[in-house]
Amino acid sequence: MNDEKSENRKNLIDCWKVDKALIERVAKVSHIELNDDELEKFSKQMESILEAFRALDEVDTEKVEPSFHPQELKNMWREDEVEEWDWRNSSPLDNTTHKEGRYFKGPKTV
Image (cartoon, rainbow, N blue to C red; front, side, top):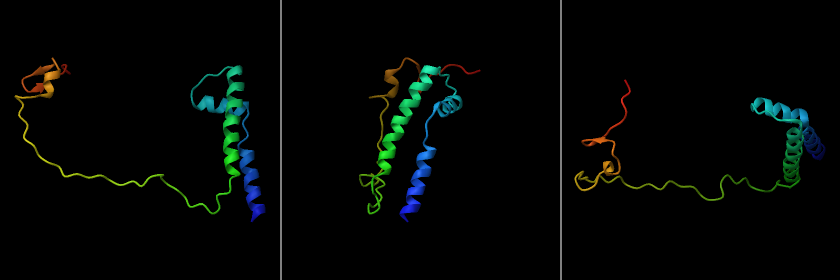
């Protein structure tokens, strides 16, 4: 089992190789133009980021239960309550000059 695990890890490390060609490919599909200095800079940055993930791969999580969310999620429901609303006392139209009667007035679209 350990041999299989180390072989998988070796293959994973090989596929994480970051070079200038990879950064050029990512830039191309992202429609970003990068000069040679930027390609070199981003190659080093990407390698540094992936190195941090490689370190996480070394952590033994064999006996750890998966955690999908750090806190329990539950829906908070309330009953809908119908209330009468008197337009004469307060109105959403009080905050706009673009109104006509009880309606918002928008630009003509014809």
